Image 1 (spheres, rainbow, N blue to C red):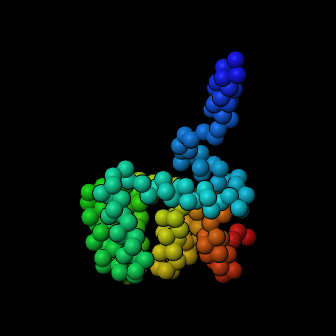
Image 2: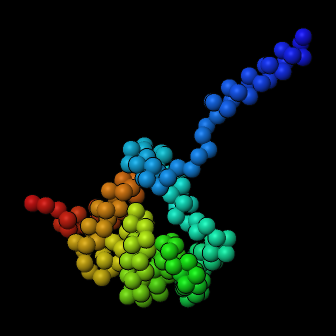
Length: 183
């Protein structure tokens, strides 16, 4: 009799754990962005990482390798090598927004503002919610002296991600200059 009771207990334990265990379903971009809106400051970095992981997944190991090589070259401040890897990525995966976003970063760092703006426009057409790409656009607008458009970009970043520290700081600096303030 005891082995049957043990079997029932184990079966019941597995059944209960199936209902109590956290769901492993993927969270959508829209859900993560909505969570980011209401998240406490302590939760924001986790949600940002989840979004960046989602945006950085091309669905192809070969394209992910090109993305990784581009990121490594950017980290090493080798802009020309980053542009090469990321150009190969955008050629082979033209619908992958993160490739365009990172190549824009490489072009910007190389002082090639025209191609950087073109790539940011392409990246944002593919993924209009990428607050880091929008932040990059704000930085470029500020660099080019269009402070109002820079402020507008930072506002949009903060609309999507109210915890984006660099956008907050940049927006505050512009507000200190009187940019974007209403009378």
